[in-house]
Every structure is written in C-alpha cells, then in structure tokens.
Amino acid sequence: MTHLMGETSGKHVLLVGLRLPDETEESAVSNLSSYLEAKKRQVRAFRATCMLFKPAGNRLLRVIYDNRPLGANADLDAAATDLVPLEEMERAVPKPIGTPRVAANRVSAVLM
Image (cartoon, rainbow, N blue to C red; front, side, top):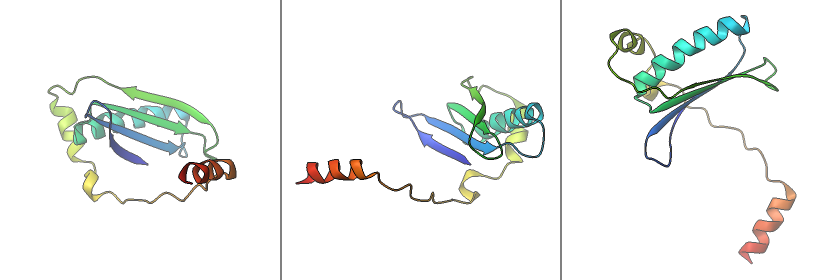
C-alpha cells in the first residue's frame, strides 16, 4: 500500500505499508528504504513512513521514517523517474470494517 495524504500543516506525507516479502527482514528494509526515499522524492512529500509487517500481517516488524529535506540529488531524481507515477497507481477501496454495536448506539443517541 502506498498512500499520499495531507497533514495539518498542509504538507504531504507519504505512507507505505506492506507484508514482508519472500526475503530476509534486513534485505526488505534495505530495498524499502530505497523505495521510500525515491517515492518521497517523486511525489515531493515532506515526510515519509514505511511500515513492514510479518507475512500474516498480524505483527509490525519495522518502521522506517524519513523527514529529511528533499534538496538537490540527481541520483534520487533518476530513481524517482523509474517509479510508477502516483496518478497511474491502482486505487484500492478498503473493505468496510463494520461498526461496533456500542459506537452505533452512541451515534443514534447523538442524532436523536
């Protein structure tokens, strides 16, 4: 999952999350760090975060965080042009989670 969103300051934040692929955790972290840096560059995000989960998706293994200023960097510019542009990436609609009964009752009470 790669998601670009705004924060309260009006700047863009890049959020990436995925399950550990068929490689070691250290190798995945190295590859994801490079991807995160290039994608942050491509979308001109102010900061970027990547969350790496176990294959089952039930345990967070690592968080990679990058809030370094973008600055000039020809190598990163080249790496960013190799990525799929954000506007061409497939959009996935998340499945509804469902509303807990207690929360639904509170909403009903507030609306009455």
